[in-house]
Length: 367
Image (cartoon, rainbow, N blue to C red; front, top):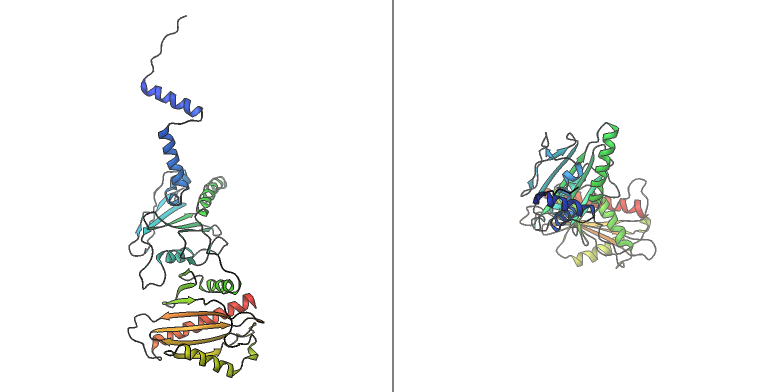
């Protein structure tokens, strides 16, 4: 029987070729480029905020409730998107990074502090923003409503902050399916996490750990040997002087400290800072009740409109002397205020509190 000819339209011919190519594991250059572009979008650092449909397996829509938020000046908030009957929520902000020259910390450090306000401290959450980071992610799966926050620098230099929240469904089958999608999001966010800058070892790293622990929970940023953080509406700058040999032997044990030693140390400081007004001369820091560990010394002084406090920590044996200095530039001071001015008194109380806290943390961790 003769075989009848079948006419195939150009559109059908193209469809058949596509089916054959897919069956052979091939694809057209256009389809390949589109697929590769989508993969790069979802896997790249900037792709996490654009991956809502892929994660949710649903087309996102505007959330029923748009939560108000006071974003930093110059930042644009995009409408919050929801899926899974509003159990999955994503909102994002884009704006300039950095900060004004007279600011305490960068904008991204402020976002990082905001991200950690309601988060539980975990091994995946560094406590203080590192100025060298280009991106970072906070993953908080310990709370009932899961939360992920990412920060990343975009190619044009702007920064983007994205927050995801998931309230698990009550039905076990639905919750298990959602857990799989959330696990995928968690894995993608983990790729954005960066480690802090490596230390140099020894007492310098020990002091750095104490300083970061003391500043954690506040708006803070570390860069090199400088740590900035805010407390009582003041900006504190901590300069961790490298541990070195003692110019004047300071005893490790508090009971070995003598008044003439402190007077000699104060004389050396006065020669080094001839324009300083001494608020508290070189003194032995009082030991806390039932306190343990060695002696800690401190001094407070003012130069122009800057109030400074320094902590000296002798170590056992022939170990180095550990030092940390905290500086507070009095806000709005055009001329040097008198030592009994109210702003000077506030800065003095803050410095005494912070130096005491550092000394207590050091003793608790290392002595």
